[in-house]
Amino acid sequence: MADSFSLMQEQYTKILKKYLEEKNETGLYHAQQFSKKVLENQISPEEVVSLHLDALEKYFPDLPQGVFDSFEFLLEVMMGYGMAYREHQSLRDKQKELETEINVAASMQQTFLPKEIPSVDALDVGVISVPASKMSGDYYHFIKDDNDCIGVAIADIIGKGVPAALCMSMIKYAMDSLPEQRLQPGALLDNLNRVVEQNVASNMFITMMYGSYDPRVHHFYYSGAGHEPGFYYHYDTDTFEELYAKGLVLGIKRDTTFREYHKKVEPGDFIVLLSDGVTECRTDDGFIEREELTRLIRKYKHLPAQEIVDNVFYQLEKLQGFQLRDDFSLIILRRKV
Image (cartoon, rainbow, N blue to C red):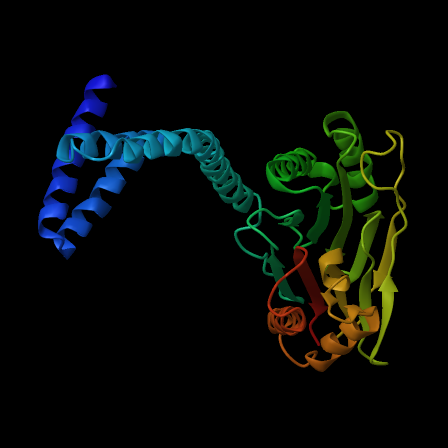
């Protein structure tokens, strides 16, 4: 380290001497390049002042003593600054490390989401899920069995960052480990609740809506665990009703039983599942009303399901100045006419 600093002293003295003799842009360029070496070698600000003082003593040995004394004073001033600078460097390194970990977790999180939406002749399905930041607290999942029955889950993990990603992985693999119950919403939530209660910290909560669509009889069975109510659209009357499923948040109470509901789905009817980032869209005037959301959906109801969710997202994002304040997930399952 001492040899490295001595080399830096020699280089700095040459650069300063050349600049003082020629006073041109080339000298300033060399000074800028030297500053990069200073950062690479983690030379502190007070050490840079020391380099300059040493160079002056060599180049101007007859300078008044007061000049050198003033540099000694400057060195004392820069020592405090240097300590703050090194602390800043340390925090910056830690921030870079944390950002790397978050990027890895965000990439991992994407692998938990479905690669594609299951295709069923009787259904038109649209999905959009956009995180407010790199990490999302929203999760959705699709499965299809041999009878073309579709299982769909939408969940909101009350928590952000890496813990939410880890929790999301647990939900996915817990659901995948219950194949015989994946299309029985009440039973699935019963079992998933026990997994969450045993494995998730008490300061994290998971809400979920899980539904199963049977195209053989066109029934939609669903259960809820404290999740944001969705909507059911009646094609014949052009009306919406809340798709509410009462149930405790997952992990609160081990022996919770989740009630199962069902709807007979007529041609043209559709089911809307969503996260609270949709209904709690916040503008300068406050939160939007749920009626505003259904008005938007009705405006685009003539479009394919995917185009409906895409347009609704665009309009709500626009209302927020294209700055999402919460994760946004919206799913529509429509029985084809």
